[in-house]
Length: 360
Ligand SMILES: Nc1ncnc2c1ncn2[C@@H]1O[C@H](COP(=O)(O)OP(=O)(O)OP(=O)(O)O)[C@@H](O)[C@H]1O
Ligand SMILES: [Mg+2]
Picture 1 (spheres, rainbow, N blue to C red):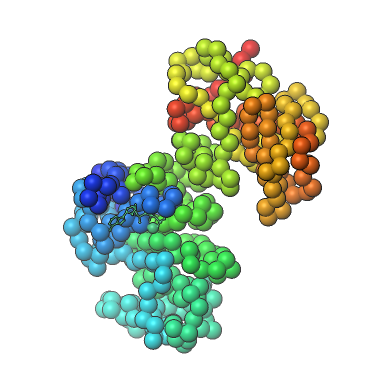
Picture 2 (cartoon, rainbow, N blue to C red):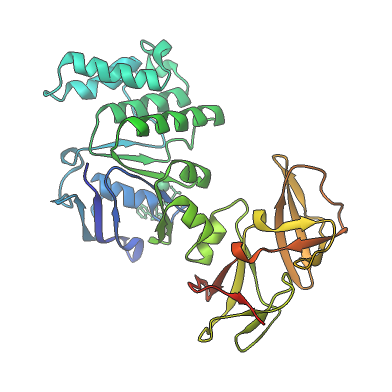
């Protein structure tokens, strides 16, 4: 399986750059999720890799093969779109087998074997002779995924395949996708704006913002060590808290949420903020040496059994996610602890690579 190498890829529509000078490598045999807000250029980038869109500048290689000028049909890529594209009057098995039959190197028995394998993994055996037009959209999308995978192309591209599928069918698709990954090692690019999906499926996430890749890293690295405030905000539900210091004297900082002071690396200039995820903020009923008192605000809510508390400490507002249970009442005083090992510091929006220590 080849890697996918993008070199200075740009796609302009008039004066607007939908994809803006991206240079990166998606390693062979891995799943890369392109994640980012609506309009950031995910589909445009994927369409260029597929050969459906021509880059304004730059080149695309699959391994050593420069595919920039090749049509989609010459690139050995399979694609699954947001809306399944299929022969609606044909049966499930026909839809999976027909593209395989066009490959003359495959025997009829091999075509059937591959089709049977995907039907089994997708648990579509009972629907094998059903017509596509009689299936709901979730089942159709399963067939589209199976058809793309059965072809065993070097590269498979998915553009938000689960967006229009109801939640149970979505989970079934994600499970089937993981099962296929365990059997086959194609190079996969999976476009999504659903971070849970990206965290579940990706070997690496390429986080996009305004036509650029702002960070490309393994999901847990992206989550724990976002390179920018954008990454900290976009990942997480809700995203990170960003807290401004209460005061700063030279390299010494004080935050409302921390007792004592912190020492920045000496040469740091620029606007500093402390990032901490709501699930890392501890909310305690009694004080300890590491806590500060906080008040619960009315905007606190409960989602999916977890409490999402809105708190105020001095002048600072922050969110905390706590385990299921009865939340503290609005207006109550509690004690919050922001463990430094989970804090990330940003200077002018970018992560400070050095550690920040307690002062004194
Ligand atoms: N053919 C086109 N002509 C003009 N502008 C376009 C064209 N295709 C895309 N764009 C613009 O390029 C930007 C990126 O679009 P793209 O579809 O790649 O975003 P996306 O990240 O896939 O968004 P979504 O999550 O909504 O699918 C958008 O502002 C879009 O309006
Ligand atoms: Mg899109």
